[in-house]
Image (cartoon, one colour):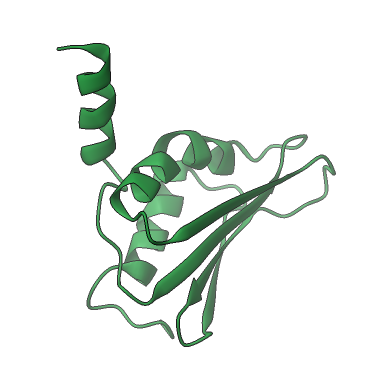
Length: 112
């Protein structure tokens, strides 16, 4: 398998390779590059590319702060202006992704 085929295959498969609800408008992840936010950093590197590839209409934003006291948080904005926040403090990227998918896949509601 060529390098390009391997990369595309990785984007199409794995945790986060799923189509999100149509009313998800924007996803923002805030974390510190200076403190122990390894789950958030790994989420950016491993899960977010899959989410972006499979959901090109959704705006994804990463805010990496140099301040060590920033609490990592994932914010999901919906088309009806509802906002869902997921704390990413001291949890692994797979758990961050699972909580994110529960909040944003078909059949879930924005107020959940």
